Amino acid sequence: MGCNGSNDRGNNQPRAQQQQMVGNPAPQHPAQRTWSQRLRDGDVPDAVNSQDFANLLPHLFNSGENDNQNLEEEDSKYSEDFKELEGEDRFEAMIRRIEMRKSNFYKKMGSKPTSDKNMSTEEKINYLREKLNVYKVSFTQGSNVIYIDREDIFYDSFTQFMNMDHQKELKIFFRGEMKYSGQDAGGMEKEWFTLLTEQFLDPETGLFRETATDEVSYVINEKSYETEDYLKKFEFFGLALAKAVFDEIPLNLCLNDLFFKLFINPNYDVTLEDIKEFDSAVYNSLKYMLENQIDEDELMEFYFQHDFDGHSYPLDQGGEERRVTDDDKEIYIILKVNFMVKNFIMTQVNAVREGFFKLIPNEAIKNFTYEELRYLCCGEDAIDIEDWKKNTIYLDDYDSTTQVIQWFWSYLEECDEDDLRSIFQFVTGISKLPAGGFNALKKNRGDQAKFCIRPVDYEDENSLPKAYTCFNRLHLPRYPEEDDLVDAFDTLLEQKEIYGFGLED
Image (cartoon, rainbow, N blue to C red; front, side, top):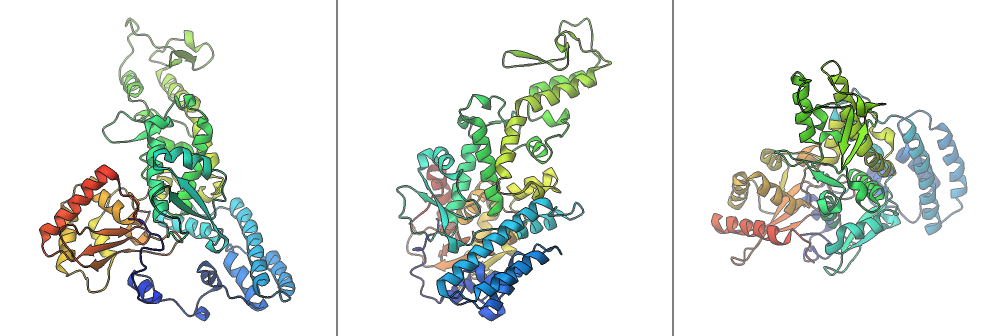
């Protein structure tokens, strides 16, 4: 169940109390909060004195470097003119100045490394997120809205998403399902990313193909050039991937290692092991050649060329006439695997990079390994129930000892991996945990939003749990018997198979 402004209207508790109940600290008095916190919260008074303004900008957009002196001097001069402004004019002037500082910060961020290679993965990701948060556009300056038809998710997204200001908040409206109120807290965006990811990987889209391996994995389709506007669509994929990182929404991509290796380093030298998932038939053939002696009397002959889609391509000058021998088979293998990748999918990888770096600077991930980039984009692979329990908040009279809560955890412990992930997606709107696990669950504006369970009355056998994905909150009825809870969640899983976890008004 997604979240818009109408879902909690029946709750008459004070707003501050509600925030505490979902695991957030009680709001501080404005004087106790920094200006950056106040601005992110939209708490900017009509009248801001010049001293406040002079203090705000250096703290909000200081990059941590020591070369900010000129900018701070500019702000000091600017604040003198700022004294003459009042009310709304003062606020608008402040926003304009913030945008100027953002621009300067972005340029600085793009010219300096954002992390050190010696940092741990967690430190690199936290440092990156801290820097990205600096140039997110405040929700007070509006948001982007995309109108989506569920029957045409890819086209609607492709045509609307590309030309937006991606530093702004993104709101998703599914046509015919609910009236857009502008108050969605991120639940629909998370569902949109989940559905869009499925569309990117769908063979009918033509961009990726599934590998012939035991585990589900995808690689770039060498024949994607047959798809209309294929490079623009790969650029769209890269931009969507960047937006997901920007908004801290992990994607269930299942892309193989080779994609991330090439993304991090376009000059990467491809190895034989790298193409094991990319083309298992070629891999097995080359592996056999490497481990066995070539019999020159065999009918099967190998030449320094690569055959693909009815065409032969020489691997070096005169390669179509140069027969492979034991003495040069290792050179042949290196040339072949690099030719396969660099000539048939590297253009697509570069298009993905172009889209990604439109939002996130190249330097921002300069010191990431390919494994760390995958972790940043795709989050945790496994769902640890003990970690889930440890990072759960119980509301009202529910706690870890409540009988229905114990039934709930027992049910999850009995689930297989697919059902467990489906229930996790039902309550959070995402199918993969963000980097950092359950403790890293957040709302769309970056505030921590741990998974929480709130009690609701049990009415009859049709009482099903409801989820508010924007807050990672589950409304769990007070089931009188364990079988009632089991039946309810079994029903949810069956509905998921038929309808998907949609959004409810």
